[in-house]
Image (cartoon, rainbow, N blue to C red):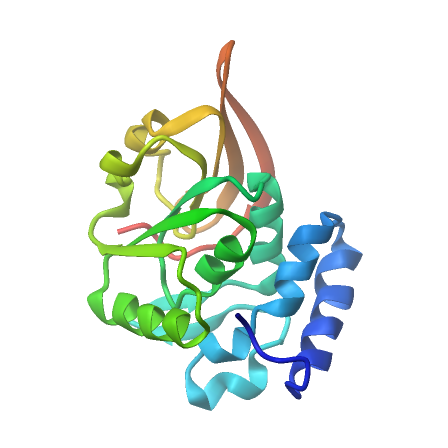
Length: 211
């Protein structure tokens, strides 16, 4: 799927995982493995590829960004994916988070509002032979009702409040990982349990707004 072991950027990914992700407390071995394997540089504009493994977000056009590697790893870990997981992603962007999710889950459905970004993501994912992803252009706050319920929903842009449709589309035991707020946000995990909906606050983050 991702680059071969001969890929010269392998050492950069290994350093990224060791220094930016594992040292900050992400411990899930499968998540760390996915972050080592997915070639982040393939998802950024050509003029930014030398910064692909830097510790921060990068602009990908249309007012959007590729998230900081640590945040991608943290949100993926919080989703608690298994090889049988059905995952909804809201905000395909360049497709990097999509690829990480697809490495760990059975199937990923991803919604993006900007057609140019969705098309670019589709091309990159195809070039890496990632086949277990379905893409749609549309309003991500509405989710993907006909594919629901989902074992995990990962939102990569920030609404002012959690969209009710996304909570409705969680399977029993499912987890919604979402940044909520305006200029600065808090990361939340919303879960559907037999006792009802639970909400667990996490770290402060900064995402582009969910449009």
